[in-house]
Image (cartoon, rainbow, N blue to C red; front, top):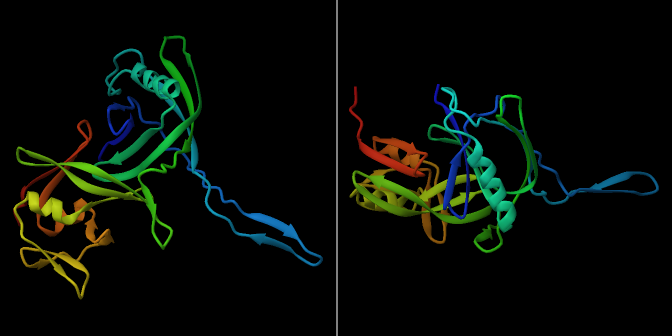
Length: 246
């Protein structure tokens, strides 16, 4: 089984800290709606409203000593929480299972509390509310909230920032950027609305933003038969050589 990782960060990965011990259960995400009800003479009617920012809480075990089962000590997590609270900035939580992104959300810290147990490890409870950026998000006609950003990609020794977009928690990259790094000729099939790579149709999920095609990088790698891995420590997608076919 691929190990699950949970990363806390702030200021576009200026500081990234991995949670040393993953909770037994990932948090329940609460999605409330701004619905309103009112009563007429004969019925109670409901007016459906917009989504409220998501919220969730988590309980963390933060060791202060070195254990074989812990990835690091937990004092950095407390320092990060204190930093974002003091500087009044949001943070980001990313949970991955290999290349699969289980959660990627910007949050504000509502509150946190902690205590030291009898062997001086830290027990911490944290409550979060989704943070909605106003400066770098746009809203499509279908209601999707888009957050444009860059993604670190590496092919061999070449590292570049490629264009990416977070669509309601799902990350896609601009296909042309990734394929150009691999030296692959890029085309466009207007009829199928799909990207072409060296003349081959990439029949994968494709979104068009600002006139460019965006896809999931793992789908691109699979279609062109390339190895791919996620370097969580450096927040980099690494694209390797061709996979030998059996």
